[in-house]
Length: 241
Image (cartoon, rainbow, N blue to C red):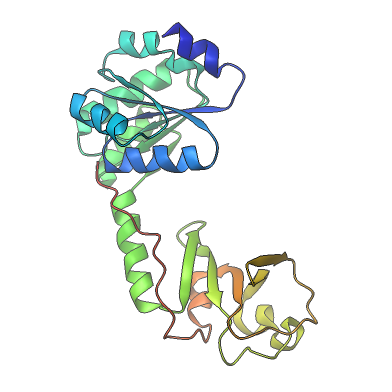
């Protein structure tokens, strides 16, 4: 375990405790972003699947409710720990408590219900996430707002979206459209031919087929005249533990 501790001292690093579908998805995303990750689970089969799938993380089998085992793992050396044990309430809460008491600065915990989330906060979780509820909301929006290609929810009221330039916007400049005044949204970037223009020149005309990156309130975003024939975004994944 000391080898893990020495390796991570000079880098920002993450530990994911619980390697079900949600935990594994978190691991893959962090790896793709260029971070090193330690994954841990008491289930030997889940640990074996990580190895079989050749996901490039350091993976160990350990009982995360054992405070001594977590200490031996060097859990206190990690900047951020994600407790991805959402479906086992007692195990999730005990693990979160031990991780926080070990001195980890930032602990993210997955919750399966509001009560579960409240308990996680009481034992020290810095951030509680409800992936199943969020996935359901995302699915509903993708079905009812088909003009949106992708969405990043900043909070329950505001989002950043990607959408194709609708027919009614084509050939008009950002200045002509007055998006902030008319729709309450701001345009962050335009993408055409695979090239992004951040903070685009407001006098440039929008082209049909280009992509807009917009930020705004969800109610205002819903008012945009986006093309209904666009394919719904596909950033929904299975997030059960």
